[in-house]
Image (tube, rainbow, N blue to C red):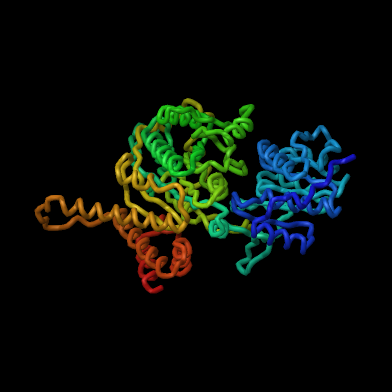
Length: 573
């Protein structure tokens, strides 16, 4: 006797987007279906409901789930078991077949890539639904993509899921449909899309407040020259990489100051109604992760959980942390995608990874809403490329083939070369020496808009932003940030008024380009906020409309001329 069929009536109620996508899926009855939904929206529940429908009506006899990591295999199997679908998470390629006690198995992309013929035989033996979780991983390597295609071509149905922007390379993703546009480029076509902005409006995900920290950095080159740069200012790619690396150095002051601020924010959330709120530091490598954990223990007096992908028991530590009261976890990339820890509410982006794909995966760990009003706070280096990604949280992306590669001034390979610590030889390490770094709150980004002016770490101005209430709606966050910014500017004006008036000088000092950009950004945000209060449109949509009309990057990366053009344009809206 095989496994009992799941009972559809026992399934939890579906969210509106899940019901709509389910109806569309059942109406089409096509072999392939691609669902794009923001992290935290409930892709697993949606996929399992489809699996139950197809098992119940006899369309399929078996289910195979393909996940990116070993930990996610267990997570999928546990979620499926709760709704009556039994999946074998311990299946190995050498097993050839699962026990009759299971409806199917959960495997990884790497597992399929190693032995695609094993999975092809399993797929041909019984009518099978294949659920390809985070389908973009099928393009990670030629062997993975070819393996997935060879293994699952005979499947009766294939359901593809993703919650993040598609790949930045041009490896076609198996079973994804591409359509050529008027510009000659091929773009992936999704059958169901549920973006972050939609989920935020529905209360399915949390609002994310980004706190960007800049600061002065100093390092020594291989030639013995000492260089200094302010994190976040326009620089060459090499200087950006070296300044960024200097800031993330555990031996400097930048990381301790940012971790102290992040823990202060976490304590505010815990005291303000989210008693089990937790924090996650995403590190570049294992050596840095262990160093950050020691810093957290020194700052908080409490040990942090360290999760490294190649450590035995990593999945067990994640599971234990999920249901514990511990405050901090430090991980490299294992917790960057798919792992479900709903109590994560504060993040520190202490990694050099800079692609839209990885950034969205990382931020996706903090957006899962449990009840109305919970917010998420993510601390990150004030690097233009990251600020642009933070400003574009609501942008929906497709996988594009044939698009010319643009030099955005930053790339993961460059930063990886600058941050080789574990693999570096002694000679390579001598080429770069971090000397010092200090941190200050540069700006707060929310809903595509930038708030605040520079505030030194540990000052009352910084505390004003760290002390935002933990239970707020998206609209309340925007109102409070506008209020905080107004109070900060008013306090600066009062201080200037109270200061003795200096003797007039023959010539006033001209503003630097950085000062002009700060003033223009402040003026633009004030005008956008005023337009928001008049029309009710979200800040992000107003900024997006200004970019559509005027062109150019997000305001954090815009030139002085572009900011001036947007200020003139918003005054005509």
